[in-house]
Figure 1 (cartoon, rainbow, N blue to C red):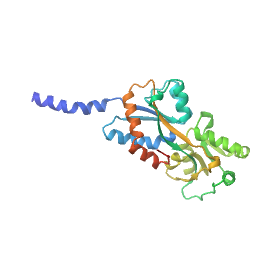
Figure 2 (figure 1 turned 90 degrees about the vertical axis):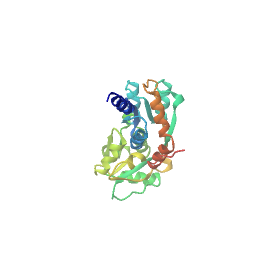
Figure 3 (figure 1 turned 180 degrees about the vertical axis):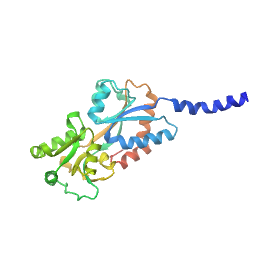
Figure 4 (figure 1 turned 30 degrees about the horizontal axis):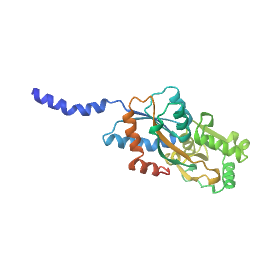
Length: 252
C-alpha cells in the first residue's frame, strides 16, 4: 500500500506541478487578442504553460508596462516595441514579428456596403454615416490615432466632431457597429473579423492606409523568460502564423 501511494504520487506530481505553475503573463493589443487567445489554448494543450493574456490599445499597453505591470511577454506595434526596447523595458534580442495589419471599415452585418475604394469615396461614406466609431487617439491607440488624422486630412473633422464615438479599443468600436450605435467603424481588420454581428467592408484605400507591423518581445523584468520565449516561438511558428493569417495579418 505504501509503495502504491508513492507511485501514484509520483505519477501525479508532474501534472500537479503544471497545474500549480504560474501562467506566462502576456500583455498585448486588441489587434492580436483573438488570435493569441486561440493560440494560448493550443499552446497549453500541447504541453506548454497556461497563458494569462491582458489587452489594451497599443499606447495603454505600453504605459502599463512602463508603470510596472507584471508581464513576461509584450505583443505590440513596432513603434511601441521600439520605444520600450530603447527604454530597456523589452529585450531587443528576443523581438520577432507576428505579422502586419491593415486598417479597415466595418458595418453591421446585413447593412449595405459603402464604396471605400478611393479617398473620395471613403470621405463620402464617412460623411454619409450618422455616426462613426474608432478607438481613442488620446490614449495612443494605433488605429484611432490614424482614423482621427485621416478625418482631419480629408477636411471633415468639424462635420464629424459630434458624430464620432471613441472607445478604449477597436473591438468596442466594432461592437458599437454590430449594435447599430454607429454606422461605420475604422479599426484594424483583425478586430473587425473578431466581432460577431459586424462585417468587414474592406481595407482603407492605399493612399489612406496604415500598415502596422506587430511584434513580440520578452520583457526585461520577466519572471518566466523561458515560458515567454516558448510562447513567442509558438506564435511565430507554422500554427501561429496560420492563425494570424486567418485573422487578416500579412505574415512571412
